[in-house]
Length: 326
Image 1 (cartoon, rainbow, N blue to C red):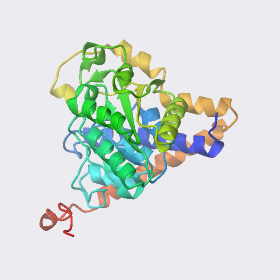
Image 2: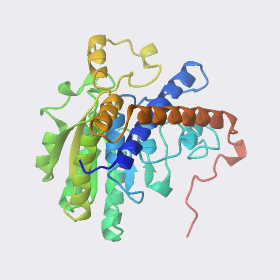
Image 3: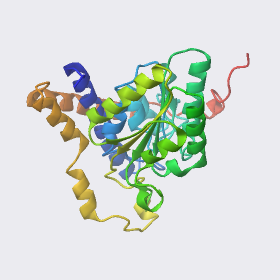
Image 4: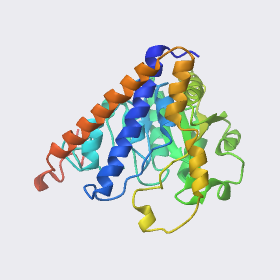
């Protein structure tokens, strides 16, 4: 294991941030304070954290509609994230982006989108800019098993492999595209099996193990920085909540058994990482408890900050909507 105590503890801290943040979002949504959809990342924390732990602040990431975990894993401010979700001016995008559009260019977060697979060509374009401008940064994009079937995804992978672009395609295979099992929509056993058709490495990894995801991503980053081109990583994970909050009121579908969900919960990424740190002598039970307690306070403060932030003024509607002409 090449990770040290500080890195492992920070990974656990960020995983806890995502988990407690999402639990707070669910509570706020259920109270009616949050209007509109939100897509919980609970159960998938190890993918975003493991991947982002292998990146530098200058490296870029892009994500999708399940968008809270990615920016928090990259180091995004939880106060700004919570304020954005509540549509407040203290948010990443001054309250104009909402739950599915969190961005912070200062630490390489290009943003997310509710349009399935739309971030894949954006991240690929960023990698092209890095190569042409000799900027040296790596681009990584998160997308789901459903998005892997979109044309934008295939076109991006083909171009990235053709031009040896420094981009990493991170497929978060959580088993379902809303209610459709990937086994019913993907003709091969795994999404990563498709990599050979593009001429790039395809890596299958346990998405519940943050260390395993870090190891796979770290090698992909090495290849990208060395000019060896892109990598497709498929992290097998699982979302414990429905596709989006309130979906059960719209779609009445028993697409998965409760026993399946309970079985998946036995491989919760947070206890897996905590156990690994303790068993390898990098942390004690008390140290892990302290991290959890501190993060609980962080999230409580983020909720309070978001609630106290003002809504945007109607007159500010078009501010920041266009680039300043050169």
